[in-house]
Length: 152
Image: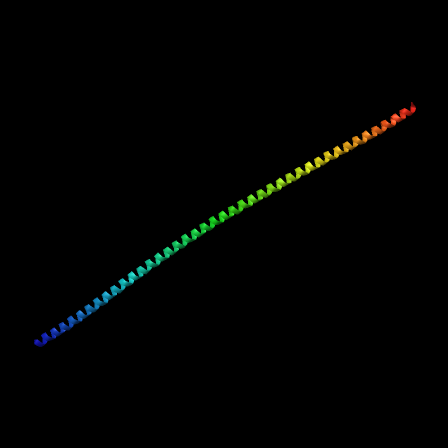
């Protein structure tokens, strides 16, 4: 019986050690697997969250930057366009008014000069005509008195 007891004891010891070893091994593998999967899961989760956050922030930053640049460009172009348009209209208005003013001034001066010259010419002509008529009448009167004197 001792031999059987020893065999049972040995068998139980081997079985216990085997079961213990397998249990420890299983638990170790299970624990390592769970730990590995947990670490892997949280690493992937962290990287995904970090990637998405960085991507979101980058997209948001680029969108805000793009919209700001676009808004500034539109505002700059609008202001530039309005300034150029205002300056062009102002320049054309001033130029048109200057041309109109010079044309009116030129026509007025031309009209006044022509009128003055015409009046002066007519006055001089009339004056010469009167002088010539006066001389003619004097000559005629002088000749008629000399003619009258010779008949008397």
